Length: 246
Image 1 (cartoon, rainbow, N blue to C red):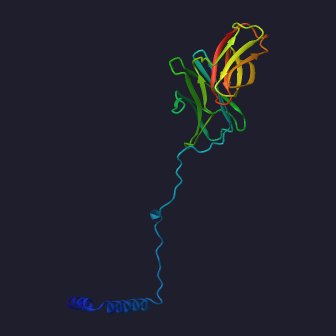
Image 2 (image 1 turned 90 degrees about the vertical axis):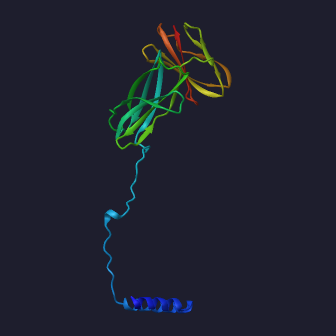
Image 3 (image 1 turned 135 degrees about the vertical axis):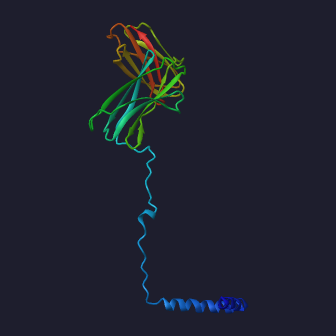
């Protein structure tokens, strides 16, 4: 103990230059004494090595093709029809509805049933009688067993007849005149469905901003009864509906 203490006191009394000289001598002796030695490092424990893992947070691209949604409003029910192809790894389809176009809620799910590379049609229905908003938005979410998902297109449905269009005569005989007011120049698709949901007429128009008067032809041969008129803005995808009889 006295030897260490005296050495420590001696080291304190040295000048800075002397301290550096002693340190260099000590390091040189250490390197010389270690010459010829081989150092063997033990293999690290694999459990202690940080492993980079890929975390799947969902939203991956599914191998679906032609994943598209169309809707039809009839009375108080919205009928959804979507198409899908190449459903490999798809676990379920979830139909969703939104009242503001931003927040969607699940309505139900459908199991995939289509074979590979075959375009398959799926159907669902939504009772909108309790809905009080003017527009309802729909989409379908496809999800696989790993949490990856993909969305179809969003389709808005206008539940309240707007002043933007009107048609006459009602009942009609050989033709229908449609008055359509557009906020901007666009293209529209006019469809007529019978009361059984079958499409009996399809006609497209290019319209200008403001009021447009259009003629729907080729309806003279239709049977007498109730029909549903649907107008789709091909730019905004907004849908307006009405009823007409013959």
